[in-house]
Image (cartoon, rainbow, N blue to C red; front, side, top):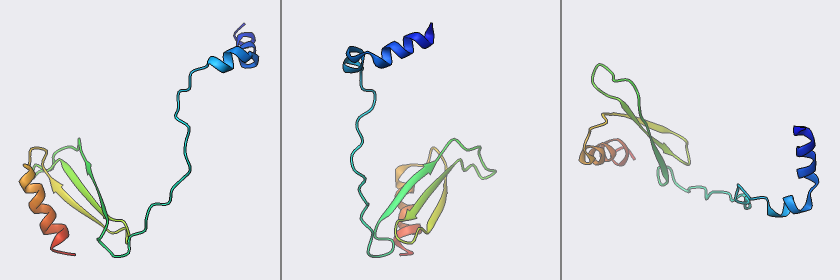
Length: 97
């Protein structure tokens, strides 16, 4: 019976017209702009929900240069203030590059 219903619905013109679209139609793929200089364009992400290290770190901050694909991994604690994040960025990224 299930197969009969599936076949009927698949062939039914009215069913095809009123069927809800669950996905937005995809557009054309767009090539991202290639950076012209290293460390001019970076991406960042956080790896969270890690078990605590003996020093109390439980987050890894990942910073990747889009041109060279080189990465910096910075250890952090979940309760570190935003000011520490800014200082770490200046020390690990800006000062090096």
